[in-house]
Image (cartoon, rainbow, N blue to C red; front, side, top):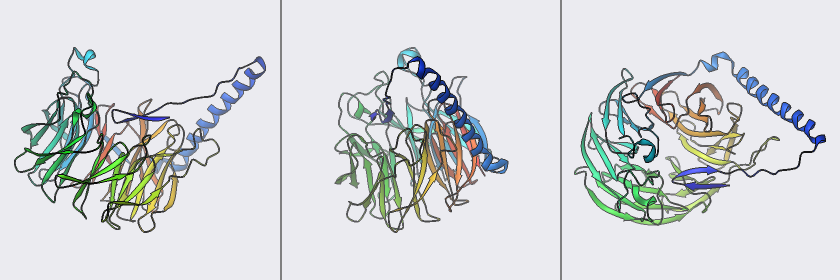
Length: 440
């Protein structure tokens, strides 16, 4: 069973039990031995199939972001095209307020010079720094602080403004900050932010529109329920917001449509825009396609169930979605969250799944495909697959022919962003306290 809690997906397993008599005991140990042996052999054979060359096809270097000897928690990234810097939101030492002497560590934004891949600044911001974006109109970086109702605005290496947002008084001791989002709309110069307090005391879900020219809130837009993720549609210049079972469409400072997708059990969690057919793809476990001209659902794409004989669970839930302009396919990464993981290629023309790539051989123990991103320098898709329980994973490359061409062991990667200045991919490792620089 899957449920949502503060923007995170959680999984509960319900296993059948049976009495073990003496006659069953011997068989139990035999089956356990065979299971462990075959699992290990399967993984070893998979690695051998890639060969040494494919493993060395990915190079990873680490940038440590700890502060004063404390363990940081790098979360999200933004690339600043004006100065070539990569900005990383560092949530801070991960512990509840009671475990941090009553107050969690103050968050920082770590600034990396992509010419040298060295840390050049650690800028103090608010508490619970999460989503971070770059605004090309004023050349400023915005980071949302989920635990104290603020957005910090950064220019180069300094905070130039703190914008208080949110309804009510959600503060660092409430411990109720959930996933929030930010997005920039280039058609009207507005930055949109979700309400950090929507998780506290039943405060309403509101989207705040901030003027890039003044860095002041110009509108508070009420939406139906909790808001999770944003995406901008360049064809109709509208912003799409993921709610609990709906997608809210915002034009300017007005919500103009409420599109039902998903279910109360599986909420919309991510978007990707297809510039070829001008459709918006919504991930909610499966995929719904919204025609941006009418804002109506024109297709629902169900992810095929796990077909392997040894699947623990048959249902595959989509976790990430990204578009590859090179072969004009939408890619969805999904798992059964126990032992199998797949990537599905969806045609822009037919909205049908044209290829299913089984990536379970990379990791077959509680796999989670955490992030996927397109590399403009080589036209490949990079994705990270990890074991969230034991905090380890792999980074892999999928080429335009839908073949996994390289795999390398990695920290647990939370998000990846491509840097066009040096052609490298940057990944945040929340638990590893590092930023990975990934190249091929």
